[in-house]
Length: 160
Image (tube, rainbow, N blue to C red; front, side, top):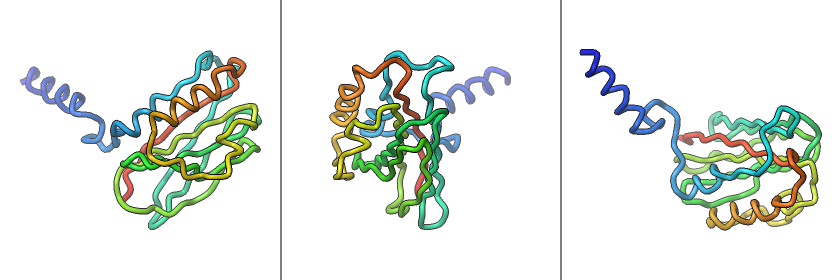
């Protein structure tokens, strides 16, 4: 009996978090989820946290940093369509966006001590559906950033 319970638990874990209520990113979204920047992770480094919650026909977004920084919030739909939906240079973002059509959506929160990079200055906010190219461009953009001055976090939500 214990073996059966263990086998069921392992099968559920292997099937992915979506079964347990947490959505999984698809391949297009995974390129953004995997975005990392070298030299981060110490307690003195810049950190960003964020959340996106659907309330009716809106998604409420909030994000903040542990010290002054610019923030850009990317919305990546299931098909890979990516938009910058919010920006701030004050270390906090609070906004809402239309929920749109249903599905799993990724919200990526990018923070940097230097607000001169394109995510914080670019006029066009619709970036298309080439998430791998976007992730590569972001990695290249911040490659020379001083250690601990760039941070990312993300959340996935199921939009009804």
